[in-house]
Image (tube, rainbow, N blue to C red; front, side, top):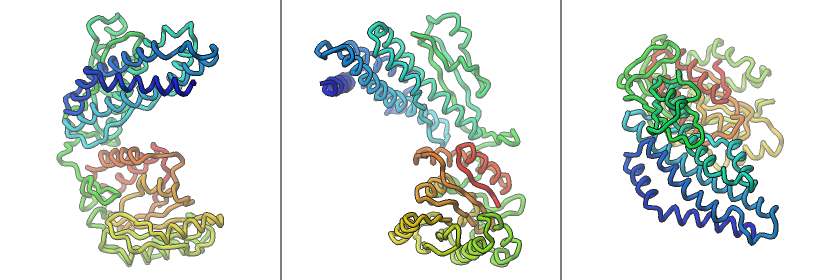
Length: 441
């Protein structure tokens, strides 16, 4: 009975949503690229009106046997409604931001607001208490409006870290209180009072994000600005071009397309060999890693193709290889290599993965995610330019969208630089800020 009531309530909400003319108008605006953050707040008002009707109809159904059953239904129904609300509102606000980015010629993916689970659970507690139930619609609408505000804040923060200089604008609805009047105005991010992103009950203020024209990019280390039209470009890990790599570095270290031909004299040198010391703590294993890096680099010199070698982390014994990947800048996992990985895992063997980066760039977020997925203990990236990096498995779940966002941030901060050392330092710093561990040797 309880489950049927909840399912019926959710179905009722979706019917009301699909038949709402106001919702259709707002969806048409976001689909046509004309929606603003003010429209996102109107979308909140409309969806919350529908959800309030659902609560009034279904929150405490009389045909349940007792108050405890009614509280259970109220709690679960409210969780479901808030989950649906978060998905709808956060997606709408994200689309608004994506269009703002496009119009400003900013190639970054719009960020979605994180769900405030603690606050949502607090609303569940309100819904479960008949004495507080009357407060629920206003509290829930305030929560939903905060999702839009959090979208503004998340994108301002992300783009600021990516080198842009966003502005935050808070506008009143013309009938605001003294507190809101004091907060109205335009702010240069990150110099924004925390209260700008907060709102009291029944607050109708709109917080908007102005990304600017996307032309001025900030180097967060030198604090200088440069025109994005003059930015050099970095190539993406999946073989598609996000930007095209600079042809040479001001400090003499080659990278990009000029780096794909390997200096075989250097990789055979003692200097190169000594850079591997300390990777595993076992000289014999490290000599095997050097040997396989040289093998991969010689095989792929002058191309954009990658190869993969898997070794036993503790003994250096060969576990498997991939030397026939067809796509540029990408390793294709064959059925044989997957079987080798599974066999090693079943035997409790620790794996160290070795692969090359033809353009000499550091490990990517994808590398760390792949290491976690395949159960590697560590990975080695050997660049065609003689660069050498160690990376480790991601310690948390990272979605494909988040990987893309991390790579976008790296591209924006490093794309206009010509100094390889500076690119490497910023790259590793950004990866570290996202919980991805890697180091340059």
